[in-house]
Length: 376
Image (cartoon, rainbow, N blue to C red; front, top):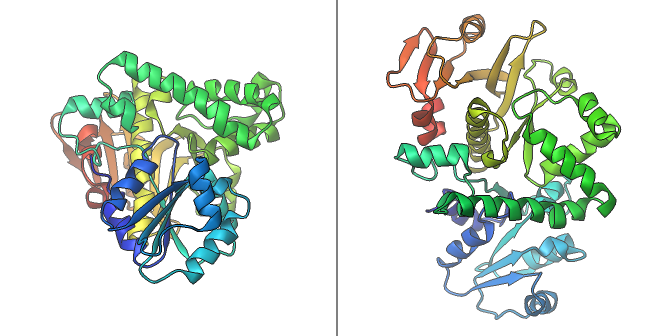
């Protein structure tokens, strides 16, 4: 399966360095090596490998190298200044591609001397659209099991279960340990299990703190770690007062839908959330368009699952239903009040219907097409 990011990364490499970040085992290294096939003299260097580390530190690649791929270089002390020096003194024909974990994203948010020298791209699990899913079986597998390459291509349920067990243990053993002391790992494991059972609901820091017997601030810091590692992502409630919206409880979703321990409706909503998150990243990284993903919840507890907005103005409301073929009254009310298009996604409906600005759509068909075309 070809990754959509391949062509846009090749385009951006002509201008600056490119950083590829995202969840572990999502295919960052695989994509980097596919891109290397487009070059005559590429060099792949992984800082975890001793022989490669010596080449990196001595800068001893051949002069005709036209693509340098640095993997896990964030583990090298002073890696940011190292890359700055390489980029500022390199020959025009040399391109630089950097892959790694959430540390790249953390660095990106903090800002540093590399500003203006690189493009950042997020590689997420396969969505039904990127997987070119034409069969309901493949779409269902992405929704219920995972869009990560290995479980997606696995032939048996046992293979998927084994992958997920190793994936979770690897997250705790390696990635989470990099962010926290070993004494906190057990708390993070317990938090992860609680979150798996409460996907799609507003996060209650106080409730989680009572269950784990830790402070709400500690819960927030743990969630930041899980988010930085691309295990979960949060979406805030929409408000035309941005500062106010940040104070309200966010909703939480997993990048790996197979992590969700809830019912079929929660898995459907999580799958839609991942596709919409991927859409917002692609809009910014490929088109330069800044759009945000939120949800709507009023004081009367009327709720819409998702709201896409630009410049703090909503342009699409999205509601996800497992089997309800009736138009949501809340969706109708909000669409009419704000004059915003709305989509109600329902699993396995055969006939799509329209009402004013609202479309009742088959959820699988919606996810299987490019959301950039479908939404706009």
